[in-house]
Amino acid sequence: AQSVTQLDSQVPVFEEAPVELRCNYSSSVSVYLFWYVQYPNQGLQLLLKYLSGSTLVESINGFEAEFNKSQTSFHLRKPSVHISDTAEYFCAVQNSGYSTLTFGKGTMLLVSP
Amino acid sequence: NAGVTQTPKFQVLKTGQSMTLQCAQDMNHNSMYWYRQDPGMGLRLIYYSASEGTTDKGEVPNGYNVSRLNKREFSLRLESAAPSQTSVYFCASTLRGGNYEQYFGPGTRLTVT
Image (cartoon, rainbow over all chains, first blue to last red; front, top):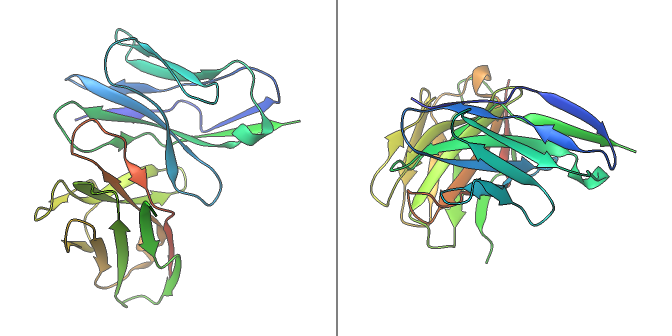
């Protein structure tokens, strides 16, 4: 069975500061990895994903994540956050060949001026 | 193109009442999913349908039933609601049961008193 651990339930940060949201997973097979974002009172939206190839993946709004197979991690980073990045972020893993996602418990990113 | 739609947006039930949550997608997706979201628990899979005509249990299926009415629609039924089913319910769909992005609906906030 696969599992996802998001080590921080809440991360407060000042605007324009860098941020890292941590995600570790466990799985016995090859995986696909995802970060989803949930803005208040909305559904989840895909932020970025790793399927294969380059281990560094980027989103259109400046986030990036790096797949580290040896450390079974997929941490999300942004060099300079904005107030509008305030949201809850979910890491998710899918075993290749399966159709279901397993989500972490989420990390609330709180950006203040 | 409305994406994934859910009805109702809000619902209050008394213990023991029944109701059906409706979900529809207009993206010609094959797979559909029902999740519940509770504070500090992330998203947990209730049931899913990998393709029209099939349904499977997820992590937390007890107390729920589903129907894949056709390719577009996937409903979730609570036969006898309990306070433990107070949650936000999300429907999602994906083009196929492999490594494609899941698209989420806006959610249904259910309170059982």
